[in-house]
Image (cartoon, rainbow, N blue to C red; front, side):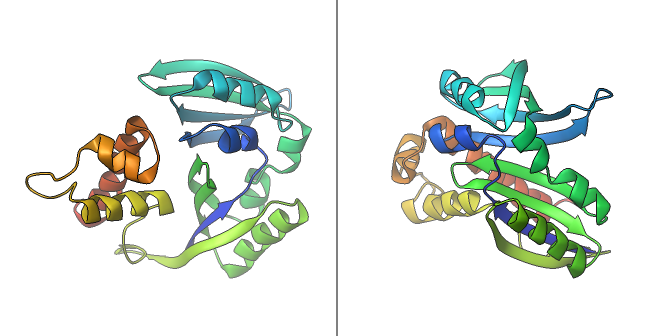
Length: 213
């Protein structure tokens, strides 16, 4: 099996990802209802949920939303796709080619995705689907899954790599610390909440890759 990591500019939540600073969207599930509606569950982290919900309302790919839960600066939303969202939905083509979406995280940089494919041809079909639907697609990396684990190196997004490198360069990881979380977030021009969340996700990925069985 092949694991591909790529970034796409998908129409679903495009407005929110472009307009709301420091937003992070963690995809949970996309499914169809018995009545034929396509829905998505996603956790959204933001310091401006008024802006998030205004952007969702203006999003032509979405027909509506429901907030299901709130934990700190994170909210779980159920989003209903409108025609543009359904037409650009990657899940049917992924299933048709035998692929599985493992993770999708939306930020101001777009949707970073990790998916498993049975072969290169199936990945090429998804790439072609994106091209046919005007969804920009850029490869980050591709590697083989084996019985001993997947890939070479930690599974980090570009934003997570950036904050770890900045934490190292700035002295945030020094003992004692040479900069505070506020100073670290200022270097990256993001909020403290976003910096903390991004840093913890990066560290968790490193631990899962390097320490756990």
